[in-house]
Length: 156
Image (cartoon, rainbow, N blue to C red):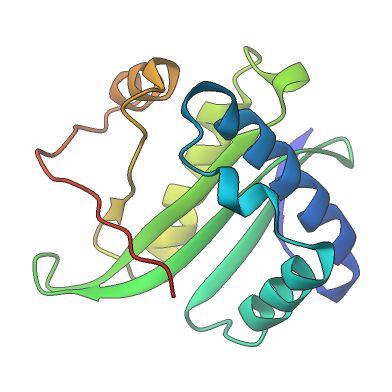
């Protein structure tokens, strides 16, 4: 059975492992996120701790099939004047490669949508890399529409 759960303290090493798999996958085609691949496990652990310390803003979800991890989502609750209230920002959604094509992405997104509604969010927003046509096709197929905006980044 496919389920989701919020990360707990005991999930630190699993969350780090899944995020590393995601980074390797995302770095294959364009190198946009290569700097993240050099981050130490200690820094990832600090990031995990910081996320867990802000449950009103940040939710880390693990997706499982019969107790085995198949993916994760990193979510943030934000305020949006355009939504007239809270919105859920889907920072990362990842289904392990060996579990793709089984409908888990659709199920994960359905859980995320239900979770957003439980939180009182009015919309879900996220970005997808221009170099990832599979993601764009998936999101369009499940009812999301692209917005003509650019995503800007500056690291400190």
